[in-house]
Image 1: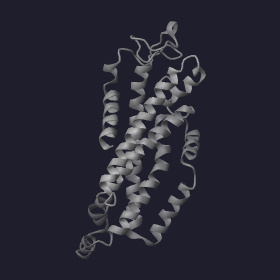
Image 2: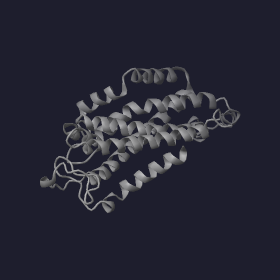
Image 3: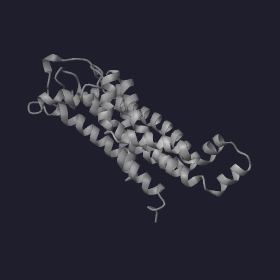
Image 4: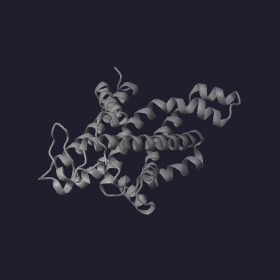
Length: 264
């Protein structure tokens, strides 16, 4: 399962990086005379409603999806690890305050809160990353908090405290490393969630704005041609499904190898 997920993710990353080399067409170039053309040898995935090459737009959209996913996971995991380790290590009122903030944010449906934030801030790629990060850090914080509560009782942590090590050093050098394997697994699964969320916001017109291609906007544009040109929605939908499936396979496989309960 890890191997299958890794292959899917690597192929997508390579396709996104080498997109301009793989497709001879520009993602915004229009051939209005051949709009809605079905897949042909010249255009393997066909043309959209404005005569733009779908393959070129898929490759460009892959770059957008991976960028958003990586940015969201990076910001969310960093903030979540910081607050989770502080809450778990110090406990007391600090733990209660951070835990209540986490509970409040988790009480709201994530995608609805993201829609509200982007609607207030305005549709853009930066605001999408910000909105998804505001929601995404709570999962990492809960995970790291649980690891920190357990790790602070370890003998090497007690020894470091007895030697006079500062709280910051103990958290950074002793607490966080114990949570890194679980965070890596969570980040892999979080990439899949971020990609779906970005596609959903773009589908609603709150994400990447035209003419920049995004898998979500491609799905939205293809809704009006489901019967006369189904390839407009089939290929972006397959791209989203395959990439999300790849990250889920990778995350599940890593979890099976990292979690001691899953290891024989």
